[in-house]
Length: 272
Image 1 (cartoon, rainbow, N blue to C red):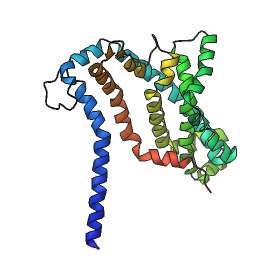
Image 2 (cartoon, rainbow, N blue to C red):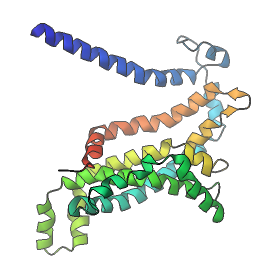
Image 3 (cartoon, rainbow, N blue to C red):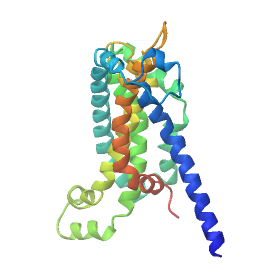
C-alpha cells in the first residue's frame, strides 16, 4: 500500500514538473531572446552568452511604452464600466433569478461568436461617427467580451452572500439600493477586485480588435508588438523585449486572482 502511494506521488510530481517546464520555458526563452544580438539569435538554444541591451534600447525608442499607456487606459475604462454594470447585473441574476438559466448562458454569447464577425459592426459605427483609429471603438469592442465575463464571474460571489444580511438591512430602514450599496456590495469586494484584474488582463492581451479598429496612431500594446513583424522580417530580439513588457503586468495580476478565479468562473453556473 505504501509502495503504491509513493509511486502515485512520484508520478504526480513528474507531471507537475513537466507542466511547469512546458509553461515556463517559452517565457524564459523570450526573456533571454530580449538580451541577445541578431547573431546570437541564430542559436535558439544558446543559454550562455554576453547579454546586450540593444533590443531594450530599441523598444524604449519605438513608442511601445506609449502604446502600453493606451492599453492601460483602455483596460481601466473597460473594467470600470464592466464592474459598475456587471455588479448590478450579477446581483439581480443571483438574488432574483432574473431571466433564468437562459440569461446566464446567453451573456456568454460573445465568447462563442468569432471576433471576425463581431468586429464589423464596431468598425462600421466607428467609420459612421468618424472615430476610426481612436480608442473609443476599441473600448466598446472590449466591453463586448469583458462585461459578460465580469458579470458571470460575480454571480457566484453574490450568491454566497446570506440573504439575511439584506433582509436585516431592509428591516433597519434601508432602501433596496442602500442595502445593495452599503451591505451586500462590501461583502463581495474581494470578488470585485479579482473580476477587475481578470477583465483588465483580457483587455490588455487583446490584439484583434485593436488591430482592426486602431492600427495607427492610437495603436495599443499588442498592435505595437505586432508591428515588429516588418517587411524585413520579424525583429525577434526587439519583439521579445516588448513582449516582456506585456507579460510582466499579466504575471503580477495572476498572483492576485488565482485563488478566486475558479470560484468566480464556476460560481456563474446554474445552481440546482
